[in-house]
Length: 267
Image (cartoon, rainbow, N blue to C red; front, side, top):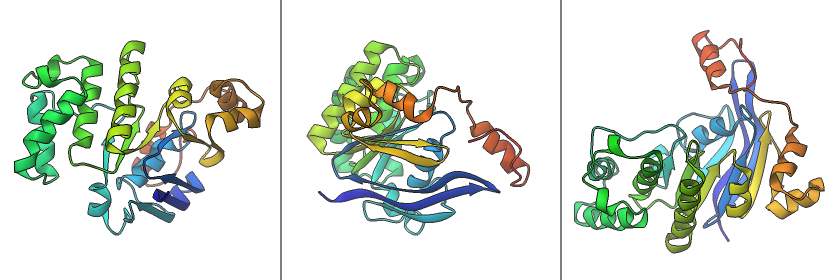
């Protein structure tokens, strides 16, 4: 099957600090792919480069055949994204949020309403489409964000820790939606999570990044076999260690504010 994401020798530096160090991987069209790592391992930095939010220092990326650096519009129309932090306008209704997104992506008006109805039904929010997002639960907001990310018929959806802060029941429902859209619409899913059972139960293949380097890649079974463990969580800990990691995005921000001089913790 053809690769829809191709990454070769990708590197991202902030001053002297190397956040992502010469990584290469690929994702097949229609695949569910998990990108795992401890806090500060380089996951979010990599996603930002894949989704045109940050330019690589070196290396190449192809998203559905488009280079995000030289053809950002082509790349952006190829994917939807659910960010780690909420990004909905809470002063608008669910319907208004989707219509705004459709307008921004140039979805044709004659198909927009039908597509919105289809997606609201998929994520079980059709009966709440005229309610303000500020009145939604965390799980409802996540489901609406997934619907919004799919509105323009992307070939790929990026999910950056989409279930963070959700209760187990809502998490389970959300992954059922993801599997359904993958099966019914053929959408390639690229996701990060700190819940190892989500990756074990959902992903076809998994890559583990640590200190900016991909240290293992394969199916859940292959990673368990490689490490002599019986769960993905145990395999992950064996590969990355059990030392508690701190979030490092604030450190990168401080480094940028200091003119590129690295003065914080590891990313």
